[in-house]
Image (cartoon, rainbow, N blue to C red):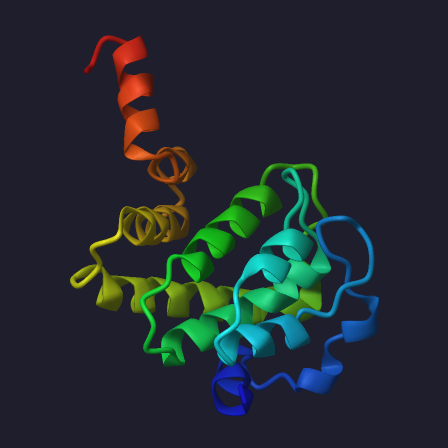
Length: 172
């Protein structure tokens, strides 16, 4: 299902080279994200991916391995969905917060390619995006890609929350 896009996103790495059985999710328990991503591709919801790949600021190797699959699905989907962008931004924000495992060597090329794909897809979708969640999630992905984590964090707030933050400092 993902063979062509994933092969490109993985920089030629074979899917069998990823230690799927050893991956851990946000709860630090084994989690293979492929079945949940296949479920989303078939029209299912994102709940399992959200629940397993991220937990209260924790991510792990399954989160990193899932990102190229999520980026591939997003690039080939015809649905305008905020979930892949918001989940990617959440994973990346957690990855760099200093309390999660570093990106494994086997994931580096694929992870970088996934971010480029998400940014490219996000920019293409942004022109037609009307949902606040979709727009803010794409902006967060772009901000993180440009190494602007505070802008990304601000973007991920609701319009009401941004207004409250600005009001607290006298800007609203």
